[in-house]
Image (cartoon, rainbow, N blue to C red; front, side, top):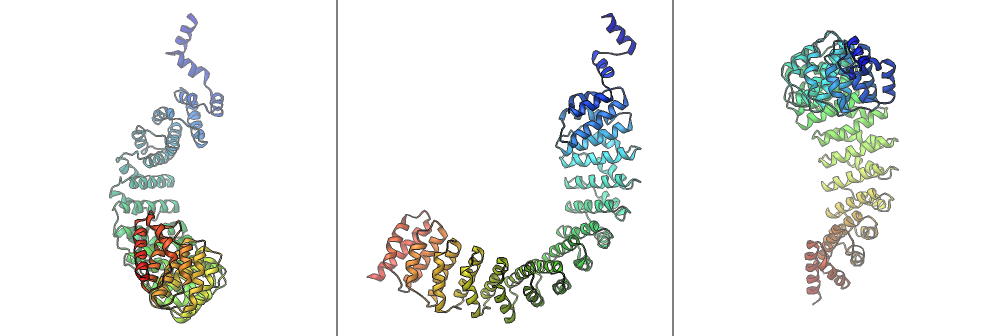
Length: 539
């Protein structure tokens, strides 16, 4: 007991715990704690009187967090370490809090100290604190008073401080926490010599725009960045035009610069420019010059540019930006040897046809050739394009032969689209008697959608006076007992049309009687109607 008092007196210790901390913990011990993933021991070491011990402990907690080893119990000691007299410890503590927040561990109590550290003399402490504030904001933990301090740091001498401050402001804006004052500060550094800072500025301007904070000056400065030397910055600026347009900003002056990016060497930049031009077109902001550039790109020898042009001609047409001049280059692209180019060109032509753009007879012949392409997607797109044209009253009887051939294709997708196209021809009265047999054969198809379209086609053919009595037997056997409600319903409707025209078979009655207990009330009702009609016809 006298020896213990002597130790307390000699070292001015107040407790046995302090003896343990000061006498036992040293650098090798910290390393062992890290190896053993002893978070509790490291937390205690953060209270040690030796700066080096505390520094090593904060570094160890950071390194373990990188490995996915962390505990909520570290937050209290780390928050205290943010106020440590030692600069390195404050820096490490801010970094540790950032890493814990990234892993879902955080405390609102960290905010006050981190905000204070934004004014630190050390740039390392400043940028780690800004980074920690961003990570906390991502978790929904923030203090609006951070904005003014982060705004000032946008003009910091250190590029890492500027970058982390912009990123923190971006995340705050994403959380709906923002001030108009940030706009001016960002515009002052939008031409920062560091490309990463410029990129962070653009991201933050986009996030502010989503919250309704933007200006003509923002649009103007972002347009300037469409010519930036850095591809990432160009991509971001191009993408931002779409965001600003969605938020109601006038971005019409960006059309020309965005058009120039459509043939940029960088694929991402091209995609971003085209994406924003599409967003603008959907809102009535467009120029036919965009289509002209894409049409010209289809004539390029580079496959990558051809695919890109066809893809965005399709998307532009879906956005309402149409031009018949695109049909010729798309037709040429449909005849290239490259499968991917043909696929995108067929998709673009399909979209144009859906929007009512008339295609020439030469174009239809090109589509017929595409029906023989080895790629199923090309076949399907070409088939659907022929279907859309027929729906608009533009059809050619020569289409039926290759379409009929596709009813035996291995691909369900191809068979479905071919049968759908033939159905439209039947609706439009564009079929001959010879079409009945292949359509009836399709009632044996394993795919229910093919059968649905086939049985509907037989109805439309009957409406135009084309009928084969064998179709009734096939419908009875292959459709009325199907598990597919839509197929049963379509079959009953077709039998009803047949009966109205005096075509029926008494064998249908047994099948129809069973449908009076069908789980689908609509099928039950229609079955009753067909039974009544057949009985009336037989009297």
